[in-house]
Length: 206
Image (cartoon, rainbow, N blue to C red; front, top):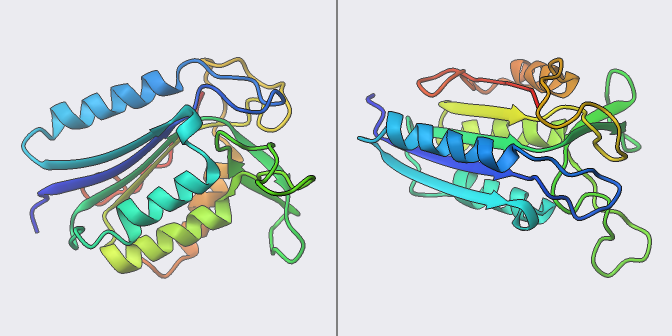
C-alpha cells in the first residue's frame, strides 16, 4: 500500500516550570528542523502535524494529544505513517508500588509541569510519563491504526528531576530509557515497525 499521509505529534520543551529542572536550549530548534525535514522530504504527501511546545506541553496535554491526534483519530487509515517526536529532559525514578520492573526503577520523559503541584492538591507532584505508559500507548496505537509507527526520543538523563548531568547541546550516551522502551515494544505482540516506511526509530541524545 503506497504511503499517502503522515500524522505526527511533535513535543519540544526548552523551558520547564519547576526551578528544580534546568532549562534546555535546542529542543525547539531541533523540533523545527524535524518538521522542516518532513515538509520538504514528503512535500507530495498529506501532512498532519500537531505541535506542542514549552508551557503547552504539560503531562495532561501530551497524553491527551497522543490519544486524540493519533490513537483515536478516525481520519487515520491503515498504512498511514504515525510519528511521535519528543525533545526534552528524561530521567529515572523509583517505580510505583506494584509496578513490575527489572531493577525497581522506571524511565520517564519529562513534561513541562513535572515536579509542580497537581491542581487541587498540597503535596502531590506531577510525575513524568513512564516508559511503560509510552509502550502501552504505542501498543494501542499499533493495534488500532496499523504498525507504521516511528518514535524519536531526543532526550537523556541530563538533569531530569534535580539538576546535574550533561550540558544542553552535548551528545550523551544512549539513554537506558530508550533501550528499555525498545525491549518493552519488542516483547509486544503488536507489530510496530522501524522508520517512516515501516521501521521504528529510537534515538537518544541531547
